[in-house]
Image 1 (cartoon, one colour):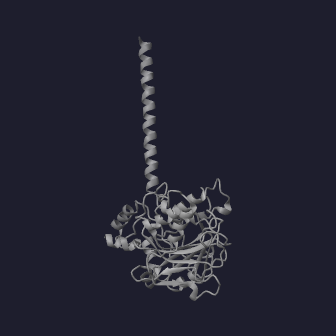
Image 2 (cartoon, one colour):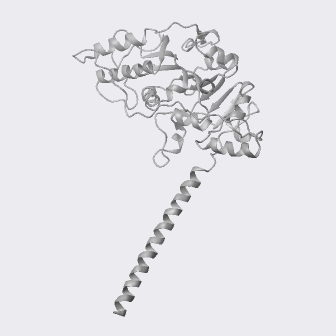
Image 3 (cartoon, rainbow, N blue to C red):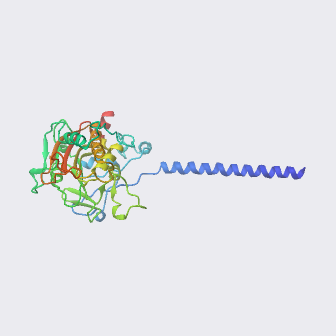
Length: 380
C-alpha cells in the first residue's frame, strides 16, 4: 500500500513539473513577442548634403523623425524614416516627459494602400472568335486615344537627341503637379538603363522637383550629381531572394520596397522605360495597391513581343495587356499623352499589323491622387 502511494506521489510530481515547464515556456514566448513589437524601427538612408559625394563618403548624415526631415524638403532632398504602428504610443510617452522635444509625427507609411490581390481582372474578349485581329484593334485604339486634355510639358524643348519628345507630364492646374513644383514638394522616380534619355528628369529637377534616377548599371550604390540623385537599383515585380538570386541582381526590388526603404510615401511622377519588363511590373503595382502613391505615370510600352514572363497565345497576351491598362483606368488614371517613335520597327508580336509601332510612350495622370500629407490634413 505504501509502495502504491509513493508511486502515485511521484507521478503527480512529474505531471506538476511538466505543467510548470509548459507555463514558463508560454510566458517566455509572450515576452519575446512583446519585445519584438516594441523594438524601435531601423534607420533608413540619410540625406546627402554635399553635391558630387557618395553617400558612404559623407559625414554627419541626419537621422530623425519623418516629420522633422519633411520640413527640410523645401530646401533639398530628405529621406524619411518609417514609423511603425506603435509609433503613436511611443510619441505620447515622450511628450509626457518633454512635450516640446519632438513635433507631432507623421502617419504610418502608405496608410491608404489597398489590400493585396492575387490576380488582375481580365476584361471580356473583344469578340467571340478570340481573334488576334480583334484584340489588337481594341488595344491599339485604346492606347492611341487620350482620355483627358492636359497642358503638357514635353521634354523636346531642352533635349538635342533625335528621341526627344518621348516624355510628357501634365501641368494642368486642376491636378497637383504644378502646385507641388511651386512649393518644392514634388518628387520624381525615373527608372531606366544606361544611356536613357534624362532630359525630362533635368527639366523637372530645375522646376523644383526632387528627382531620383534608378539605374542598375551604375558603379556606385548612391551618388548625387548636380540637382539629381542616382541609385544602383532597378524596379522589379518581385523582391530578390539572397538564396536564389545572384548578388548582381540583389538591387532589383519592387516599387513598394523601394518606397519603404527610402521612407517615401508619394511619387508625383513615376517615369519608367523597363525594356519589356513593364507588364509584370505594372501588374505588381496593381496587385499591391501601390498605384495610390503615384500622381502621374509615364511608361514606355514594348509590343514587339509578349514581355518577360508573360505567357499564352497572341490573342491572350493582347487581352492581358488591355486588362492591365483597364486596371489603371479603374484606379483613376487617365491617358493624356501618346507618342510612337517613327524610328522603331513596325512590329506587333513579331507581325506587321495595322501599321502599329513596336514601342509607344504613354502618360497617365491619376485624377484621384492626393499627397498623403494633404489627405492626412483633410482627415484631421
